[in-house]
Length: 332
Picture (cartoon, rainbow, N blue to C red):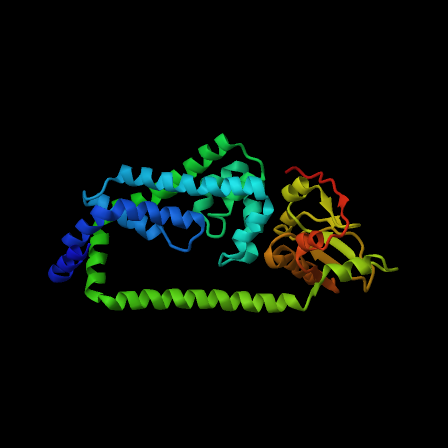
């Protein structure tokens, strides 16, 4: 490796760079895809595009690259599938908490499965926020291993083949880009690092502002339990997804279930609300994202005194409080 690096530095030609990548490209491709699908923040699309371009230059096997990417996906995805089967929603929420979009990860993934069923696995890798969460969700939903491997394998092949194919088709342009980046030298690395740092900073700032806005409108499980026994208990709305409610089979005492998919239709029928009565919403997504969206919709329709249950359904269960059975008539 040191000899190859010295040769590359001395000659500075694109040919030697391609030869170096061609010798080690298969390992780079496999490990990059494998780690990204496990949840490590290492983007594999640029590697797929680069390997596709090398294949177009006859320095890399397109089909071998596709097979390696497919195997890497299936290994990591199967790990997440079994974690979902064994751990349930807890592993999904843990995974989403470490993502850059934790507020929408669970609800977005659940919504895809409610609309598309197992077919969500065919497109999941193309959608930021659910590319890793879809596999444990399949396990949570009780999908059979054989069906999971079939659908996930097809989706992985489509995803990897798309970006390998794009790199293959535009390999001529890729060579020109590579030449331009070579002329930029170390300045290119500085620009990439600066762009990545700025992106992460913006995401962190948005998340911080979001959490601050929610903090003032929360009620903890102990206070809610006490208030449920008062003369004027709050109205409690369960805004978890229909599939999750059916799987769990329980909700908070006196809670009314509201279908969160109707948020898209801007139609929420919660009946008559006495003036001044508090409304408490809960879901099971990190940071009460679905509760916040529902509260915003209700506020726009003239309702006030809206609160969100801190920790959601899981927070109530962790506190050891009672629940009651719930029946969901909506198809799931």
